[in-house]
Image (cartoon, rainbow, N blue to C red):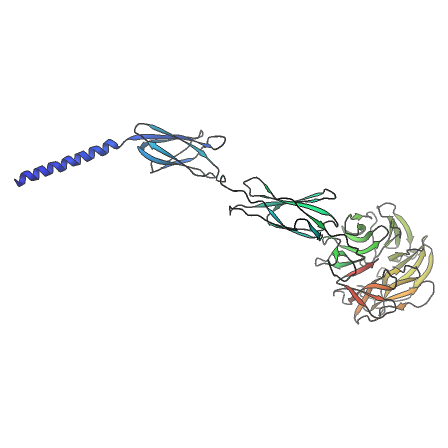
Length: 501
């Protein structure tokens, strides 16, 4: 009995095993997956696209025509993947049935397809319709970008509403830009454009501002910058209040010895060009710079000491070159030889009387000494030898408005050396045609300092000049004092070569 039952159960088990095996084999079949990969938009075929499935089957790459064939694939449901560098990986479903071919089409998108453009730039400073904006402007703006790895590039466009001149500042990587030397009394419009290298440009709205009115700066001077170049500045009263001194020339050029002419509202000055010193003119705001001399440069024993003069009408300039005095029209034409020293001495300074027909010149030897101050008529005839017979440095020449008095400097130590070092230089005035002794106007000059480059003040009642320690390396200051008054007032710290009209 037990043996029979055992045989019965064994047969049942074998029957079940055979039944299960037959069911599995019956469901297993082979189909095929083929397809093509194209670029979304123009349907251009994409070669070398990696095709794979999940669950895994075969892996192939598309041909030149974008087609692929995965070959024999077990029947079932698959997710087919198309993958290529610089494109977004694409997925398509596919159901494989026995003996059938399933066709799949992929439209690949570039990996930047989902990139979002930056926000519209918001212009921050200067504020829209801002007034009294200084000549040197810091432009700032803000932009946001949801894609943190985008490299944003900016362009700023700035338009002068008066002249329609447009300045374009391109390939900016920061959200700020400094622009210097804008015109006075001018309305400007500006706009910022941003690009992320993927999407089209995004433009800001336009914003506008108005610059400050041109100041009435009557005092011009120079300041030596850290690179060794002199820069010309102007200021209203020398107090350095309000906007402070305005730079009229660039640090990239050595510009010095400014001289104003109120008849034509121009400033003439000297500038080093290619190793030579040339005469230039510019407007009182530093614009419209023009080189006057070219073939005949300005020359002398020491170019820091050389000075020139305007014709009172502003039509021409007088300047020295070694033993010769020249005149030249301010347009660069009409160069003429005015005077040549009879003994070959150098002409270092010249000043033309404002309302009288005469010159005053300072001459010296090749070392700067044996100096004399001569008064000449416009034909070069000697009227008077005003100052002569002193040892040491002599210079700093100007004529009073009345034409009766000259101002100059003299080193009373009478020290002479090859470097033209001055030890105790003071300011003097001399009444022309009187033969009287020059009058010391330096008053309370601090010991160990020099007073240099004197000019009469606009009222003709005082003088403005440079005071500096005699070590030739310390800071120079511009001071003023009244004639006959020992007290002095500092107008500008760190300044020299003043001209106050």
